[in-house]
Length: 181
Length: 275
Image (cartoon, rainbow over all chains, first blue to last red; front, side, top):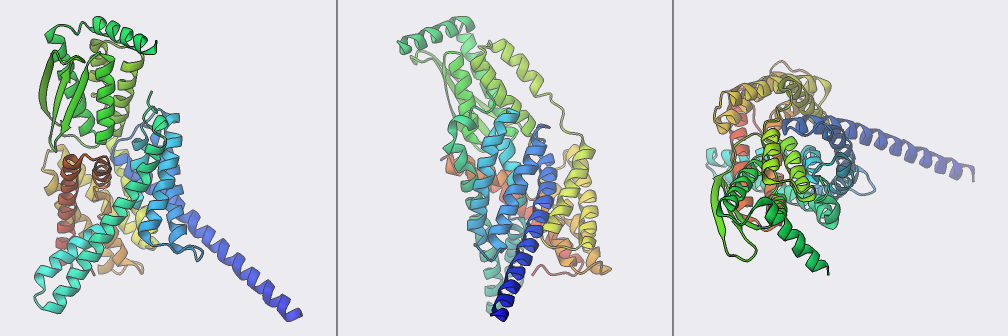
């Protein structure tokens, strides 16, 4: 009996350790996503009230995506995870933006910026360039594959993000188009 | 009963603005065109533009329809009984993204509809709004550099990589601000900034700072990715504004190609490979 209890306790401790480690990772992700959102939002000149909202919304969205993709509970593909996270971002933006008398996009789009698949985008172009400079069929196939896979992933992430993010605007049409009233 | 009320309020609005003469219909159209050129230039989605313009036109007792082309807006303002109309084509206002102006212009459309502002009052407010100064450029520079450094951390770069990315973004973004102020073509700006940033970031590989120099190079150019044009374009696509969506998408893709070109050049020069 005793070894069984011991093993069970060991399991629980392991589980707890895993959850704690995951929580720490998620919090770190949220913090850096918030910094990234503030900075990238600053490039598009938002109203001053929007900075804080963008930071909160982006932190929630990005950490949600991290959790969906990396925790052993979900392990969802990046496209679906982006859509769900963007839906969370969109809902928060629609609910919170009337407090600052701002259109939902003012909070929504800068908050989505940390999730933009920039690396996929330029890797797609890099793959295309490499296609041209490598003549043999196998090399060309390899680089064309890199171009196509990165490009398609980038496109679908963007599409899923925008669909996920703008759906709440249409669900709550009354709030979102009267926020600046 | 309510329909009578509505029609009454509409006629009163009409007499207030004196819309019955030709000149004022022309004035309304010119103002709405100018308004939409600024709203679209500041980075609004086409659905918001349509809603705002229609709201303003209806508050003045007329209707507005428009076509949004990649670089122009084709606006027609007409009386509800179609007895008179005025059409104007305006080029969209080229300006950096500005959500502050976007927000204030959206507020203006509501205050015109709800507070029954006259065209003249609205125009005065509009003139004030478009003179809103942009955010302090040194603050933006600092925040953008922090953001890109945080991005490097998100992509599991170590602290050495974060430092390198911060510096290379600081210099690249400063260059972008200087060149934009000198009205250099935006595509050239993207190529040069990506080139310089990637070369600076590849010093991490050159002097072997930290354990993740490749992440430093990869994230050093991410501050240039045109995220909002991409998002706007897909948002327009979902709303059925296919021409506008395509125009914005091509613009964003061209900018991404320019940034990749600069990055490829930088990596080639430093003898690094992307994959």
